[in-house]
Image (cartoon, rainbow over all chains, first blue to last red; front, side, top):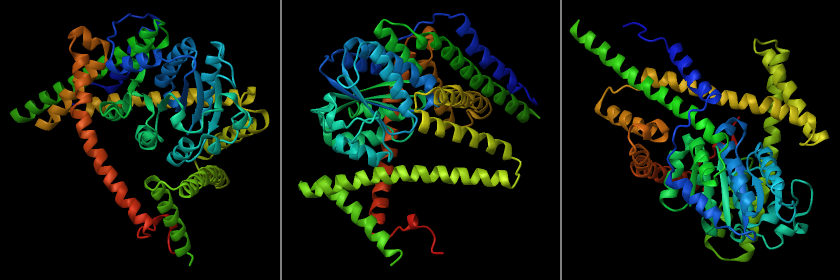
Length: 269
Length: 206
């Protein structure tokens, strides 16, 4: 059975499965996952005096998965009124920090007293170790050029131990493993936001309670939006993702059916 | 001396940082923190060096009129454009925003999005139940995919829970085995580096 199915038909099917629900949402039901609920419940208990450390270590290539997670967190954290310190260990994370700060400032947070951007630190795990040990020494100035010793939010914040919670957006290095290794001595609660592909590895740390919870991929973002009661891009995009998954499953099944038919024909010959 | 001094410095730095984790002695902790801060500065220089190498490589490709020269030219235009815009106008300027939001964001996202089509082709051509183990792998992959897609909960409401079980139990067990093995390898690599046995980071003898 030479060329039983031209792969281009599957490409067209995948393309349509993504585009059609975007134009005409289907409203497929979404079941809540336990890992996202743990994250939401923890963040919902925060008070306006709590200081978070947020590390958006991702670049635009993964914007489709981690971008909606970022937006859902901005909405939730904006409502809670918490304070946040931002630092990133990947060069393009600085632009993600800017999006965070713009979103939280729109929710009424003020730079300097509620938010601070410490920019980018090169060195991956070495930078993590240095930063968690002494934040002001690792970052003598913030991204806007102000001395960190003069920033009101950082007055009583010196090490990772002084923050309430860390939220990490992981794409490549430094990833979950590096954060687990370097946060170990500080005993700080730590939440991971990862893509679907990295979920399988990050779940291990959630299972061992080294990470508190996990928001995984676009589905995690959609679950978070449901908990926020503020449906946005992730919820509408889940229809496309669900249909695309269906195409994948169909392709795997079709591939196996064709394989068995060809094998049977080869045996009978 | 040319090789012994760097090996000694690398080993000494490694020993100091490692000892600071186990010995509660303030001067040692201060020295360890200082060395790690030097690491940040050296990493930043390494990024600059990587950029210089990138420019040099692509300028050479243009000068030699290689077939990829037009792509090298496009790369250099965007590279210098975004660098100069960020340096002289700031990261909030219209120029920087044009390069970042107008080129980098959509191109990066599109490039990553193309992976979906490659994966579809791979799933169709190679994900075959040729053996008992391959069948197990295929069935567990299908179960996880159905659990993560809303279509799965429409077929059977147990699929999401089954997917979570697969990820949280057998996957976590296998992942832990791999992590422990990798950590032991990392430990032995670190000991070899600190003892100066492994000198690959010094480059070749020539």
